[in-house]
Image (cartoon, rainbow over all chains, first blue to last red; front, side):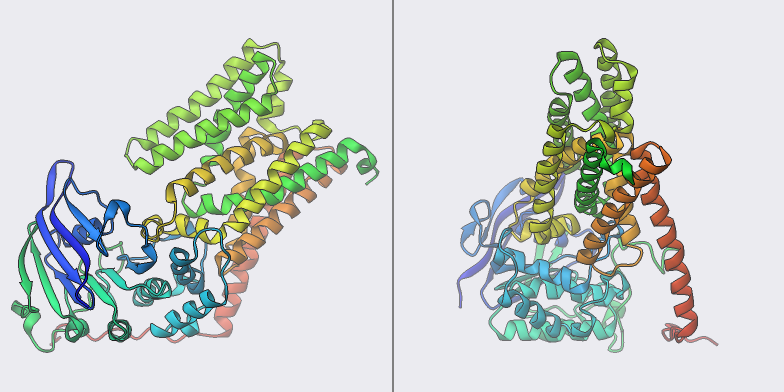
Length: 253
Length: 288
């Protein structure tokens, strides 16, 4: 249970010459649940995007399951949950259709879905509590339910590693609980998790290790730090959207 | 109806029906990636190919397929780079394409009637050879778009997720680009360069007013495209109107009917089942 799942060595990422990550090294081993914490703009999202190869490294190296990223092909071992669902140009898609995309890594492009694929999609929908919404268009779901759809999509591929980008940002309390439950089950079955969060909320008991990113470098790696300021108040219910690039909505108009 | 006894009308009808089925099957992916007007751009480039074909005395359709494919791949490369200048690069390609086409057609011996046939379509001049080309290419587009639906849906819906799923994203994007070029070129015979996007986009826009999922939208859009093509050719034959324009106007009329009917139905349903007012969240501060 101690084989490395993610290895980042001296990773450097820059956008247009501006460094976002400076010399980051991070190892996640099988069975760990690692939270990447940090303020907006600290580079925490860039870190996980670099791990997945969505952002190129300008120096250093990334390896997944002991294999350099460039030669990594076993994508079915990874489930990725992006920050939010794309709008998709207005063409409707049902919750089940979106979740079924999660099977493609396992199935490949050409093979039509079989019984195992359908069963995995059913199980993933059940795990996030959306089984009764399977036939509804995703656009009619709340933000939290859309987030759960994305988590179900990742779970449907039966991955060994889940990578989540701000899974609880702007998500209602019920969805946060449903998400924490799904994550507990995933970890209980031996899964590994790397997630970016601004706030841990109900996830806190599941997290085994926290990495704090500040100005592109890792400033803390170990136990989950105590929240500071008003975030520390016991009844602080942190469910409002945080990210500066949240879509225009209730708060911006 | 007796007009359809003539082989040229039968070919016009069959050609239109094939295109009516195939164009929305591809168009749904273009709409999903917010590239609804890409067909227009590729059509403009195809016109340069037509001009070059007429000038060189080669099959204009064949040269148009080549030009449109190069144009579609160029647009895809610009799109994939995601640079802000992509917008301007596309504009250059569009206007360069149509200006090049008009210039080359002018240099050739072709008349303005030839140019019109490609600008606005010329269903009734489809030869048996043309029909075979349309049938084979149309069937290829249909089979590819339907068989690869899960993967093409995933790539069009969330490209980053598709990359992390290990899908061949670049290949699938190029496949859509090439399919766009092929569809544009065969549809050019039916509705013309200037109306091509209508057959790819309007049936999809109509279908998504009432459908709930991607698959049902695709099936409904193909049915609507088929219906518009058949009805349009029939209207053109009976009322002696331009076939391409008739097909497009039937498609747009269907859109209006479905949009209005859908709106009325939703209003009635809302009145029938009044939903409870949303319960507001408690105040975050104590109000005195």
